Structure formats: structure tokens, C-alpha cells
Length: 447
Image 1 (cartoon, helix red, strand yellow):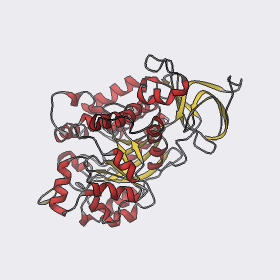
Image 2: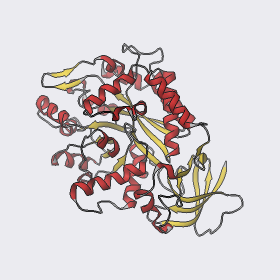
Image 3: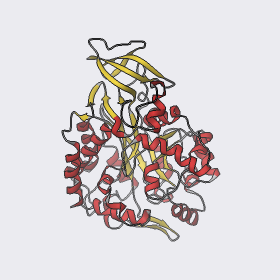
Image 4: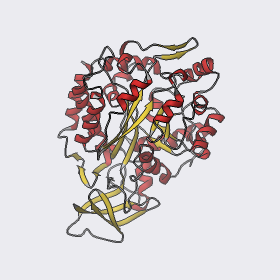
């Protein structure tokens, strides 16, 4: 099937081009024509600035149920985690499908066309598998399909409840739902997962707190060498301290010594790294996924993003705990956080930040053919209004700067995935009333 879109303005990777016609055949861009001042009669007009679809490289869909409630009082990452576990107790495959469907629809409304779902909520309350051991993961894949976006299911190994000086603690309470008992049992379950046109299967280690060298880092690395593989890395100083106490190495070095790092791997957060850690990740060409709104919400700290980029790490962005779902906010926060820390400006251009939110995000999720408006790429794109109260005023040639430094998810007007309009004029076309769907699903998840 062939469709045609006329883009009033389009970001082509280096500049904003006015009047662009995209021809889409069977879900891919097959033609890009510039200098077309008015929409051809057979084309769907998208007014505003059209960007490649945004890639949310790190998501925990069920965390969306925590928004607002975890803002009461103070606390730490660790107290936040206990509140998060209360939601874990209530979710079933059916209720998780409803929640994820609504969350992914919210993402589509925010211009996100692909999500990396870091999935570790695998089993029943007592830790025993469902009759279908991948019921929860398959619910997420189905939810993404109904919301109209792509998904990389980063099915996660989570075998231990924490790392302390005495070694590894067992899974406790809500954590029982996360564990497969042994690495080979995880592998057997993971091997049964199947992707599809909208879905690809990746893998993840939750963290060095949840997997030990005795479990077999090197074996896991061999199992997952051909798929995108993610891990939470050095999110908290306590994680580093425990790893040094038990292994006499940082988490990054422990993983490097087991052959974990490579171009297919992504370190999420990487907030508290040493200079050697940064060099290890850069030499391996591993991506680092920054989640600035979550990192600031949990008071985790500001990661060394400029140093990682200089070392050779591509950067991607994620909304993680979904304190907000807004990739424009994630992109500008990476720059603005660094301005506050360094008291200097201009660490990234708008173009570099958009690349993190699009092309490099898709690549670390195993979709290297997405994230660009060019022939041969997947026809996934989103259009941002240039006439809202936030974006009105600057000339269209500065549309990238307006999008990154002023726009919000509320300025997204259209979202197209595989050539099909998922969001039109700010309304989701597949999920009829996304706010109500979110409210109902969250109420069910919180009990």
C-alpha cells in the first residue's frame, strides 16, 4: 500500500527543510521530495515540524501507576522502591495489558513511535510461572500493538534481592515475581518469546545487584550477543560500594571482565562512574541511556553524559519511571542539567539531542532502520506544532531548537508508525479516551 504525506517543515538530520513530500510504501519511506510549497491533492498534510519518531529507550510501564503518589513527602530511591513494590503485588496479565496499552497510547500522543520495555515482572505472586510462562511479556507486546507503536521487549534476568558485603540476598516479597530461579530457566523462557512486525525481542540484566558472577556473566553475554542487551548500571552510589566490597571492582569493570560490553549493549543511567568506567564503555562502543526526569525525581544525581559522549558512547533517552512521558523534556534536561553542574552552556546542539531521541535511541533498541526521514527508513515520524504558546515566534528554520528547548509532549499534533496515522490532530485514533483508560488502569493496579 502506498500513501503520501506533505510535511510543512521537516527535520532532515542537519536542518529544517520546508515543503517535503514523503512517499510511503508498505510501511517504509520510498521517496523524499523537497521544495514542494503546497500539499499535492493526493497527500495528507502535516502542518508544523515533522521529526523522525521518538524512541523511548527505557520504560517500566507499571511505574506509570506511581505518578503523583510518590511525590508525597521526601525519602530516597530505596523508599520509592518500596512504594513501587506495592503495585507489583496487584498486576495480572490482563490488568498489565490494560495499563501498558494506556501508557503506550500516552507515549504515542507524545510522539514516541518505539519503546524499549525493560521487563522483569514475569511470574505469579508466589514466584511460580503462569501456565504460559511469558504471559506478562506477551501482554506488553499486545498492548504496544493496540496502542500502535513498536516495542523492543527487554526481557530481564533478576535472580537476587540485592548485593551486600556478605554476598547476595535472596528475592523477598514482591521480588518473587521477578525471578526465574536460575539463569538457564530464564534462558529457556526467554527463548520462547517471539517478536513480529511491531515487536523485537531483546534481553537485560536488571543490575549487578540482581545477578552474580556465579550465575555466569560470560554465559549470559554469549546467549545475548546477537540482540540488544541493557542493564541498569551504577544508578546509586550504594550499588558501587557493595560491588567494590564483594568483587573489589566497579560494576562496569565486573561486566567488562566477563565480556559483557559491546556495540549491542546499553548501560542505563550510568550516573556514578569512574574515569575508568567511562573509558571501558567508550572503548566498547556501548550506548548509554540517560533518563534525566527520573534521575532528578529520585535524586539520583547527574550522569557524566559529556564525558561518555567524548569517550565514544552514543547516547539515548528514556522516561524510565514515567514521572513524565516527554522526550523533549528528557533531551533538554540532559543539556540543562549539565549547564547547572558546569555553569557553562552549549554541551549539545539541538541536532545532537534530537539524534539521541531518535536515531541512536532506535539503534540501541535493535531498530537501526528507524529514526531518520530518508528513503529506505521505516515510515515512523511525528509532527510538533510551531504555533502553540510554547513554540510560536521563532522562524521555522529554528524549529529544532524550538522543539528541544521549548516544546512539550502537549505540542505533538500527529504521530505516524509504519505509514499509518496513530495520532491525528492530538487525538489517538486507536485508543479512544487515553486519560480515562489511564485512570481506570491505574485504579485497578493500585487497588
